[in-house]
Picture (cartoon, one colour):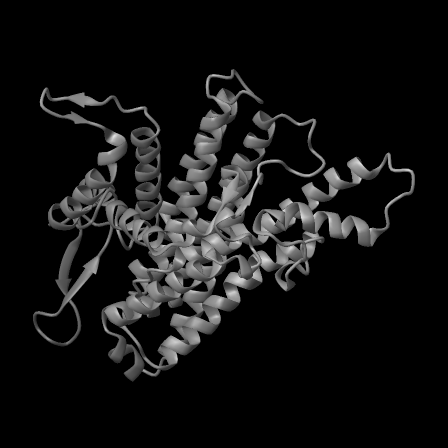
Length: 411
């Protein structure tokens, strides 16, 4: 582990910063500290940590492997749907059981099951459980679905795309088409996930009615921070070893890596599937804090936003992607939540709720043209300023060949 952090100093610094941030929020949260932060803001910070995790996953598949996926928020949303199904079922089951407890004749399990179906699907004119809800009664099985459903979708889609050697903009269009098709399917009531209504009331954890939301919010904040820390470590390990060298080679020159004997498609499929699974886990933590999920969360625009976050933070740097997601997410909450004061120009009033997306688009263009390394480039400048100068000399039998000896003063 020591050698790992010696090779990945940025990972050590990121985890240290994350730990200090968690400690600070814990001290300021209403349930565990001074109450300086509101419960809603603690939830916002917890959701931001989940978005940071999916951004890091996006950076691995795009910044390191060179696959511009415009569909990773579909995996994120599917993870939310999978855990949301259990939350709605278990919560409704408790409500139904409590309401039928005083009945003269105790209800049978089938009657309770039918009543749950009526309660959940009555909003779309149905009372029958679709086959998708077959495991909704079991938390362990539905938790497994959080991993399996996004993972299988990523595996199948990636296998079909990579074996056909679809690359570049064509692959991006395919991932976007997959996301669009999935969101349009979920909008239908026949899909079994309540159509446009989505799944709601996810913030109400079954059996914890006596626990205040302030306590639940800090629990989810801690869980999101733990998931981000473990996910960051996993991806740092993936991109730092031999696999990291291979996927960078695929990004820079796929044909050359294939000529060297590496099975490029297998590496790409592994990265695509792994990042899809982690995105699903991030979604499973995000939506209980958001309280609701509907098909609009899986629309293609969400995955485009994800790519913008990574680009602003700095593609090819895990910490850059995380910082980009954090900065844009928090600024979005501030601008669209009424925190930013409107600007009266006399002839026109700038309402930031309407102009936020314009500002975000301009920021993306500015970063692309003026600072392609994004926010992460600032840390690169700092690290180079404090780096030990290198001594360069001849290497090998050919005159003029170069070598770099680190840690020695240039003479």
